[in-house]
Amino acid sequence: MRILAIITGEYGQRHVDNLRAHGPDHWQIEVWKAPSVYPLVIDYPEDFLPDDLPPADLVLAFGEHKGVAELVPEVVKATGARAVIAPVDREEWLPRGLARQLRGWLAEMGVVCVTPKPLCSLTETAYNVRRHRIEYDDPLIAEFARYFGKPEFRITVDPDTRTITEVEVVRDAVCGCARYVAEGLVGVSADDAEFKAGMLHHHYPCLAGMGKDIDFNDTIMHVSGNILKEMVAEQVKPYRQEVYIVPGKLSE
Image 1 (tube, rainbow, N blue to C red):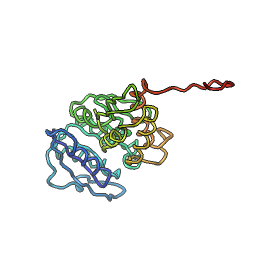
Image 2: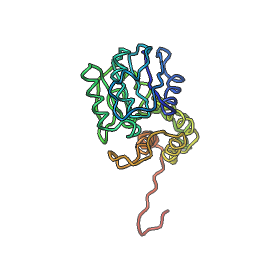
Image 3: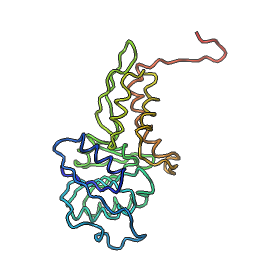
Image 4: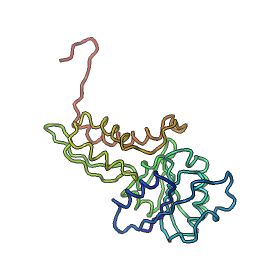
């Protein structure tokens, strides 16, 4: 699969570095560093594109400016891409209205576009937009999401000590956060695993927005962290020690 990643700064570069380090060998990943400054109105998007964009099957729009999204249809035309992933990890980089427009523009071109909010909500069949899941059907995006998107682990716990002995990364976050969390969970008690996963997620650090998002009434960073924590909590649940407190009685 031929992939073109559009980046403007550290956010996109971290994603690209992780894809290149841990993606399948048959992926060909090219990068275009788009302009980081745009006029208020982009009349001619093609003027911002270079003359030598490589052919691509899948475009990853990792720009840190909403102007990048307005260039994506022209990038698709220039590269022949058939699918686009344009994440919403910060509302100011891809506002909800523009995300909806982008999906519409590309649909008219016969190109599937997903706008996961956050990026680590993407699976092979669906992704988050606001507070609900949207299903999609595209083999290129599904191929990408088989390896990167919503974090998924296989956690092995010693039943005697209730300590995590191994964490296999089934699907990493695009930024590499899940792999980092997996390494930090080995040796942690099942009782502490959910909290530890949340702390590791923040310490990585996650690059999703820290401003309160009106779609979630929370920060997108916290939404991202909760996705990861819930997955860890589900797997260690059989090994956690439950403590019950009965009001008015001494605990035994």
